[in-house]
Length: 107
Length: 253
Image 1: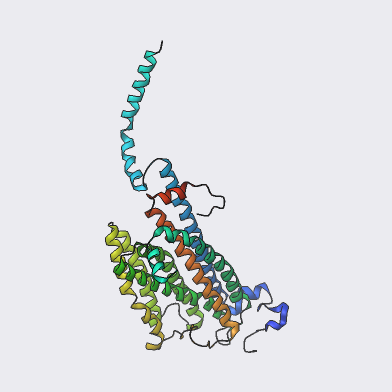
Image 2: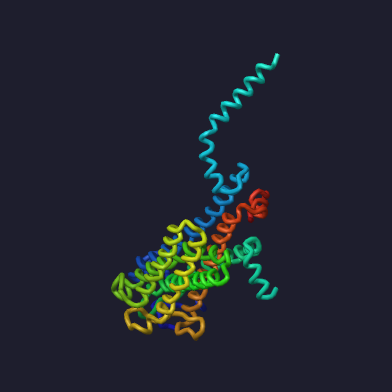
């Protein structure tokens, strides 16, 4: 069991950790840079993937809710209907006209 | 439930969505526990190697990344086969969901391998069999991803990516046996599930915890992506409308 450098057995209890100081942990006998790069990249990938997938879920649910509330059947239809809104000033005008006539009818 | 029943139910995106709610939570919680334990164990508690010193700690993140990256690719190959033979729509959803994390893990395995190679082999990069076949794996992931982006027709996209996913599985045994076929710098397998480990338990136990943790994380990540994709594809159906508009107390959908 004593093969490793500074290796302690779990029977040591309090000394489960291999490193006795913060500096030793950072330097790791000259291999610190490589070990920390590998662990840093791994943690970044894991946390990044978790955040990305959670954001994608929220975004999708929000988009679907939005398109449902807008009375559309699908996101694709919503995108195509954006072109139609460009012609809406015409509709706007007729609505104005009708309200104008209604006002005219009022005594 | 019999196997044939399960098979038919897998054809229903709605059934899959509802069942996977529990699976996602299980995998997610297991991943957090195992990865936290495994990372701290590998980094702080596991003993240094008598030859490699502390750089051996890279094994606890390199081996799981490489193993799971290959497993995800095998999963994509199986999904490709299912799509080709039975035309199951869910198989295409699975292929799409496997790509991002599989690609990232392969890149991570190459990176951590490079960082491990510097102190142990004396070089950042070595054109040995395993490194090159893992690079091919990364290109396969990127290739299928690019293929899917390039084909607008859904049916053609599904069949093309299924075909490449299937054909690409040839690379998996090449990665596996590369260390035996070509005797280069890469060390042989650190870890197999079938044989008695050559390492002491102080080293293989944290490695086992990390491997299981990354598998659970992959399960969580891929299932979540599949569920998002199902919602997008089934958005016209009544069940998705009901699910999207229903108020939730737990935030669980």
